[in-house]
Image 1 (cartoon, rainbow, N blue to C red):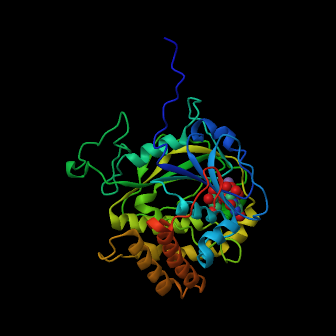
Image 2: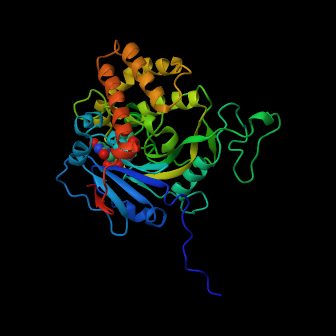
Image 3: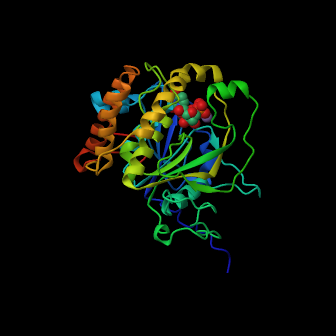
Length: 361
Ligand SMILES: O=c1ccn([C@@H]2O[C@H](COP(=O)(O)OP(=O)(O)O[C@H]3O[C@@H](CO)[C@H](O)[C@H]3O)[C@@H](O)[C@H]2O)c(=O)[nH]1
Ligand SMILES: [Mn+2]
């Protein structure tokens, strides 16, 4: 019998949204079509709202520009950054799905060492649907992967693992370096494909990159606020970092896991290191204080929901980081506004009506 031409239904087809921030164009979607075409896209158009961003035919999407964000959130739109990829978190807020995958518009399909094209989304879904092991390190990496397992000495009481909240993918070609490193090593390319998925141990922070990232929105969505960055703010390119530090403290508190490693994407554009240095310089200085703050942050046991954890974290940011710079007082307030907006849009009566394909109502 001739091979069936019926495509298998992609995993989580109706339970996952792909969120793309863009200030450029969406041509990269052509390369992702085989992997993305059956999923719903949420495009967050940054910059000039009068610019028309063309979405390639055949994709099911909703697109939000700054006018839409202001219309939907009203005064609370102040918590969504402008002129920074941080705007992507608006897509997390308006999504109705259980899972989110977010990818930058200069990230393409990479190939594994055998030359096979990598379906990054499929790997993220596998990462999210299998448990994490933050409480005890498995030296053979992901024990739930085909052909691997827990090694001798791994406590059986811990082998069930914990729910996975975040899957952090990596990048071949242009690595996600900060500006100083980019300036020192302008020609460095990441050619090393490491065939591993690791759980970030409990109590350990890491620099979360928003370029190739997936998460369980029902678990950790309210904590995935990408902060106040870009236009009118003293810092940029610390959006995903801020979200990653808040997220990890909350995942540790809630008993959820964070994975990093596979899948890889091919990152094609190196952003301008001098422009990046201007955006980053406060962040490079402040992070020496921010990391100890997050490392020592304790959430009371009364914080039983992500929203409660986040509001408590915002309180501590205001109290302890407000003296580092007044920016953190503004950021702490924006964190609270984010949760208010999240709850407004995600309570049953608060959902904005949507057109099936195209711009939001
Ligand atoms: O003002 C802006 C700038 C960019 N975007 C969109 O955001 C992503 C990332 O942009 P870009 O690829 O230019 O930046 P990188 O330096 O490679 O990004 C890394 O730094 C992080 C920035 O926080 C980012 O998550 C990392 O990937 C693209 O889709 C741009 O179109 C924007 O919306 N507004
Ligand atoms: Mn990029």
